[in-house]
Length: 261
Image (tube, rainbow, N blue to C red):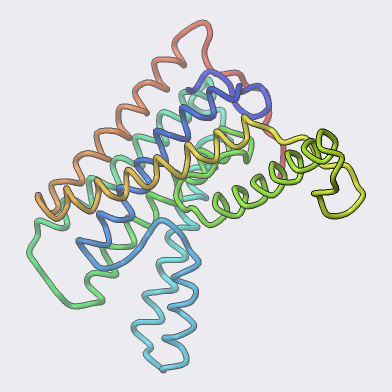
């Protein structure tokens, strides 16, 4: 999964890392919601919540919502700083260290859940900051690794892209049927763009892994409470260990730069 980055990566490499990290993203998002009542793997909802709290003049709630946005940004910033630096040697070492930091943040969250049950909403929001930072790190890491091809902490863009790809497939197949049947079945006169099966497979992999992770995250958290978070903690740590091991291999991660977006 961590041998190359950016354009040097194969479609198969991207699917593997997408499945692994999307599962973790879905698990953390739904498990965190069961534990603290807050979704933490994306920013959009917190922006909406911030605006609503401002309108209601709930100062403490609006500050908490803004803090979660900042926490997600900070996680992305920290992960990118680790990857951009050559302090850790090979890029795969940097990815490994960043994943261990993410696992550490998740472990701190788990520890806070054992400090005592406090139902105050602001106390729950404070815990959510840790999950937001961890998800910001993960989104930044996979974006850098894949060259902005894969994101694994939310599905809005994935579902949008699936809609686009479905339209391309529909036009393409309708065009071929039009030629075969000598009946106009497609709208417009411009030729349909040939769809990319690898793109669809990647998108379906992300969506499927995220949903599976979300279902397992909610169900295991309902059954085992905060201890269920050991699953993503171990998974992220194993990913970090694998990246570090690849960094020690002669065929470690390529340092070919990723394109800017």
